[in-house]
Image 1 (cartoon, each protein chain N blue to C red):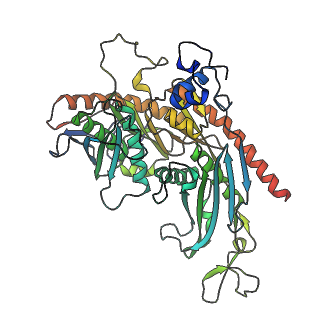
Image 2 (image 1 turned 180 degrees about the horizontal axis):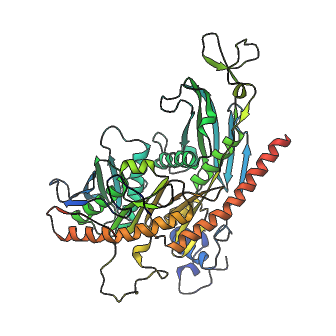
Image 3 (image 1 turned 135 degrees about the vertical axis):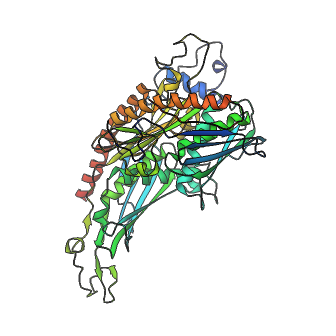
Length: 303
Length: 245
């Protein structure tokens, strides 16, 4: 740390770790003034990101996404349900985000974390309004049967940018999803198709013949930025999130539309220039994430 | 720009605003705020001793309790609580009363669109009524993006559902200051142009969002002068039919 040589400050006489704990904001400002972050990243760079598809073998679609040490495990279970009367030709998606106590020291056993509810609401808003999934594709028999996709996302390690990692794992899980084969039994109920079962097949042959994949529309990608004075820190860690306080999450989809610009309060105000800067960072990040997803896919196809 | 609205308003026109303060005598501060048919009641209790778990005791803690019109609170209400809490935290001077908790209770009386902005405006008036130290006021507005890309302000519930997307924006109020003009600029923009809170639903282009922000700012200047007027008029209920240009 070559930053400790300035005089007239406690930092000259103190160990780096002690200074970091006692004056976290000043510790960060010293770094930011040199355009670097304590973990060695430049301000606008996100952490290393990996996506592994098919992490849960019992689920119909699953993915494990890691952004730095933030880890999310997403899994989709498909079930047949009766569609509602208003939309007989549409399936349904239920999204739940879980933060078990193992993920972070601030989550206590017993009580669900406040952040979890908010993230799961944001996720369902984003996924449903982005139009990534055509709910009509989840239909089986009009008015009688449709697919219900239960998407559960577990946070295994919460180290900042929870929404970004959760959305990435959700998108990856949906792209890995294979809709299982079903058939109608003698009582007219739809059951999972088994080789021995002699149940005749549904009228909807296309859905029924073999496992199909969903066609994904424009895919949403997000980037969270922490704001402090004039600095924009892309993809903050949980330490940075707690020190900087102001967070902006921008979600853009692959057809370059803005799905969400989410800034819940915070001491730093977002001026027009900052809005465009955050959008530019998100566009850049989107290209990175698209590449990472493509690589995860081509890796799957080889297997 | 010619979007016909059911109630005959122009795209930039807000619904009639109403604000009354000090309506609950047990609360330390209270206010009701209505925009057309949407009405929200806010009460402030505090500062009370002690902070909640996981909060910084060196600062004042803000707690927001959202009471829906009927039923239990769900995910959507929890999200509103969180957004309001963070918004209020950013306008309060938290270091004046460290290790205290201020509770803001928001009761929805009627929801006819733009509910969250209405609640934020009500909470802000209630905080002033309770005498909680604030940096500045916050004014909130809802901007809708129609199918043809035009922007409509302060939508009703029906408009909100029909539109392609909408954004809730919160800005600081325009300050009356004795300083020479331009002295309080941040990066060449006045303080009241900075977005405190932004929540969007639905898909829009970046340009449409920026258009929303522009129009929202203009409307918030009107809203903040209304809020300032009604706060100055002491405790008598005030009302004004607003017509934002």
